[in-house]
Structures are given as C-alpha cells and as structure tokens.
Image 1 (cartoon, rainbow, N blue to C red):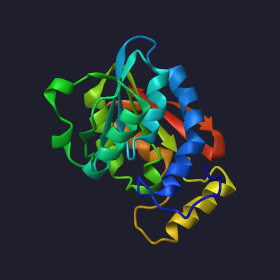
Image 2 (image 1 turned 90 degrees about the vertical axis):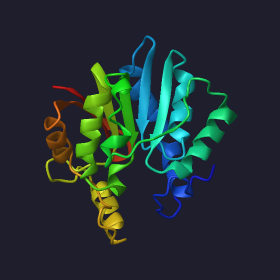
Image 3 (image 1 turned 45 degrees about the vertical axis):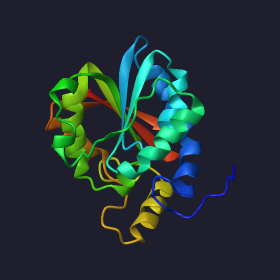
Image 4 (image 1 turned 45 degrees about the horizontal axis):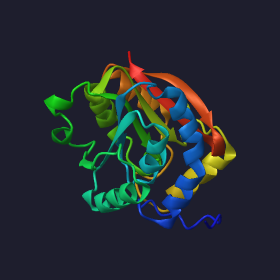
Length: 217
C-alpha cells in the first residue's frame, strides 16, 4: 500500500480515509483486546464508514458479534463486500444509525443490549453537537458495565497537546467547513454527564491521538 499521505478527503471511501485507517488500526486493536469482553457479547460500531475497521477487528474476537452502523446507507454495500471478502461470519449486516435522529436508535428491543460501542475518527470532521446524541444513544444501548470507546485527535481543556495536532487543526480549518477541526475532550465529558456517562480513562495513542473510554457514572 502507498505510504504517502493522500490529499485530505473525509469521505469514508476515499484514499485518505483508507490510508489513515491502515495507520491506526493496529494500535486501536491493542486497546480493544484489553477492553472488550473476554466472553460472548455484542459490539456496535458507530459511523462505520467503509467498514475497514470492523472487518479488521472482528477476526480477532471470534466470541463477539459485531454490528456496523452508519448515517449514510450508501456505504452499506462496501461494508457487506468487505465482510464477504474477509469471511467474517461474526459481523451483522449494517444498520442505519443517525446520531442526530433518536428514531434510528431508540429501539426498545435494543436497550442495554451491547457490551461495547466504538467510534473511530469522526469528530475532527463532525460537529461537536453530535456528542450529545452519541452519549444519549450509548446510555440507551450499553449494558450496565459497557464501554464507549472514541478514538481520534482532540484538544484537552482548550489546548492542543502537540504542535502537529495544532497544525492538523489549522489544515482542517483552512477548508472553511464549519464543523471541521479538532474538538475538545471537555465538551465530550460535558455531553456524557448530561446522560449519566463519564470519562473513565484517556489512553495516549500513536500519532498524537487518544482513545477515550466512557462508561456509566
């Protein structure tokens, strides 16, 4: 695979997203191996995009059943294609889940039915307002001891943690798309508190990223 960084393009099927995904999947897998249930359970991915992450992770957890979701149903065909190509029989068909629309996730049959939820590299190109929906959705879907893992680059208490993260933020901002840019962990914590959730752990990751682990308060 080409190791050169492609032009920034947040579309889930872009070369840039594929490049970024290939760089971060191993470190995230390491965290999942530590945090996911060791016995049978169900795991949901928010904003699955192309499906590259869930299809890479699933074979390492044969005892778990994975559920991809996305707001954009146009990516579902690619998720299914990867699942078939990889022979992953522990991945369900993708489901429409829009974090701005509770009607897509307030299903009584799904309440408290997932042991873990993860979401990768969404907030740098999504409005911080979806954090409220994410936390409310997680509080509805997670089991009592379930976790929500959010991965990506973030500011911490209003500050950039590295010069490279500030440069990345400025690059995103230069595209003049209102929602593009690094968000603050403090805002995620505030959204979590509104829905009975709290930040349990911050894990430093390669390339100046973080894994944020949320659970019930």
